Length: 140
Image 1 (cartoon, one colour):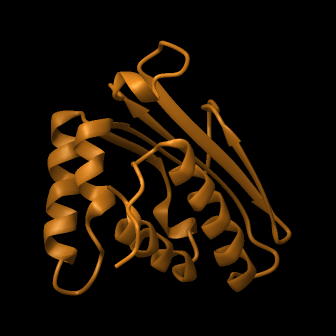
Image 2 (cartoon, one colour):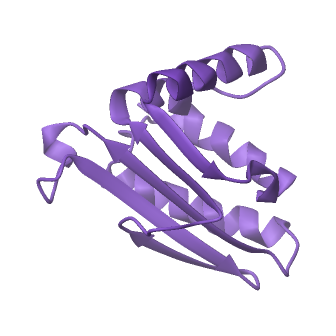
Image 3 (cartoon, helix red, strand yellow):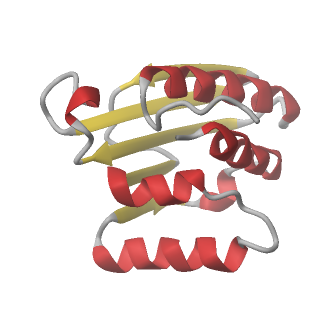
């Protein structure tokens, strides 16, 4: 069993960055994609700037990943989610047996306003889909 690390904590972000870099090498070398995730109502010990939010973004271009803390105004794919709500999704592996439950939970989040996504998920290369499961395995 892999060691678990706290969702959206510094170690989790470092693991995410490494996975983005690894999966980018498997994608089309001409991939150009920007992603931003913002987590709201975060636990106080993760709230370094007192805003109640944690955010990260990346820009992928020509095989290179530029990964940074913080929110950007627009991205090809942007998600703003309540921390406790999205934690349930972050821990869930996406497999044939769980896909319907995962999508139902996403719909619940969208309906309640706890999960707001903009952009086109089809822009994410299929090879990236395994990255979610890699993170789910280690997310505490």
